[in-house]
Length: 125
Image: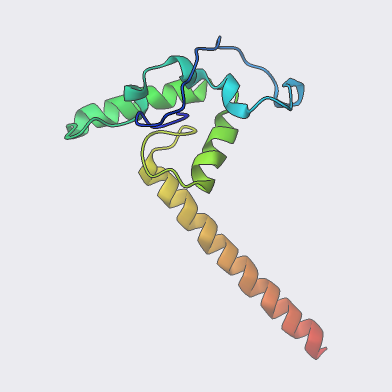
């Protein structure tokens, strides 16, 4: 989803259409093509005290919207870079995004560790 319900950004409806990334107008922001722009924000953000079964059902419905979105990858990366603490963004819940971020941090640490080891070997050799 583009913005939490408390945001001041006004979102207009856009027609749902799949446009390949390479053919999109590169000057237009990615979110102008988001399918979620015409859906209720309530589908992507939990109401207070939502029962677990209702939350899971709502999140699955939001993920179905995301699955048909031509800018899902851009949306997901936006949510991971911010990071967005609430809602379904790019087909991932907040908990799923935390897992992705933790995996990225772990991978980056391993890559840095390997690079340092390679540098030490190169300097010694």
